[in-house]
Length: 511
Image (tube, rainbow, N blue to C red):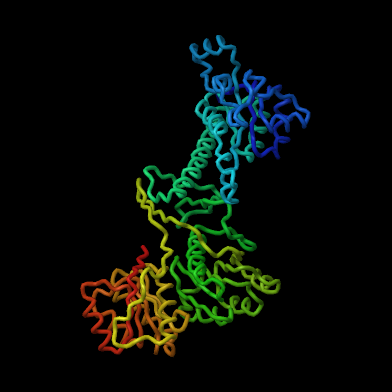
């Protein structure tokens, strides 16, 4: 077990709330405590013996507390290898005792960053990471506790080993400590890069805090976990069993679309991250019914998101079909009572629908791609390229359809009428096949709506065949980026069919 007796500890923490957990055990095993600043005062106020750092080192704090623990007597006591004769001679010569336990957390820089503190620079911790890294490096001889949640583990370890720590414990805590300092430095680095608008720094770290270990990943044979990159995840499960990897993936897809609706009554139904029904209406029940009507078969077992508080009337409609997850801004009491009776359903509160991710990452084995998140809707002014011009109603429907198209896997075709989807073709290598799927679904589930409907494409039509397919189905207006070498042929096909067609100049591939 390679047990190491703890004789001396240094404690310097910002969060002093749980010191009462560890101090009695340190006293029981007669462990000397060194501390500084506010931590020293707190420990003394709790009637425990403690040596102030400045008295221990013989060097007063300076620079308004910026230099407290950065002293050879502290770091040599931590970093020396106990079995190294040269190290032992050096310590004996300088009269430096060993420090066997380091209990240190870090200034709450991330919290102050979110609160937009004017004194943010002062929350960049220097002494804390230095102490933590020193102890973590020397895990063969020193234990480091860098998280308040590990106080109970320390107490248990000391009690089991009668005042000592095992190599397994020290190594585990070392790994956690290096993870903390890496995360902390990443937050600071990202903040500075954002200040300078540096989008692709030479060195990049993607940081995250583990929220929960999931039952499994995308499939049962894969392990999975959920990490957050900010303190506020924005969602809260209020009923049902634990969320799965796939649930979280679908929830994010749903909220990404809902965040574009602002204050309007919107409904999004997601299956395998693809929308299978979207609608915006003044009435939430009508909005849900329209979204469901787009593809009621695919909607079964999916995720539904509503950007308003769910009423009893809507709950009764939702209860008619099985959804794995229902997300909303809240639930009326009678609505919650109805929905929670369903087995295997998860109910999620989400008050923050505006997603602020500025970067998108895709891991490719030992590398990863980085790009700006696709937050752009229309980069350029719409260009009418056909003889026929759109009506105001068609224009609104076209904009709605093109917005939804951005969230559908490429090649993507979205058919819509007013502000409801009526057919979605997703993820096909051939754009023509996506046109056929979208048209087929519209004709299958809403044949009465396809007349005078509109279509959106995430990228240009390479050939006229897609235009001809949509026209034959009953579509009367199309919106697409344009940019094909065959644009003239495509425009001619649209004119021949009597269609309206707009070019956006903005592509929305999604892989």
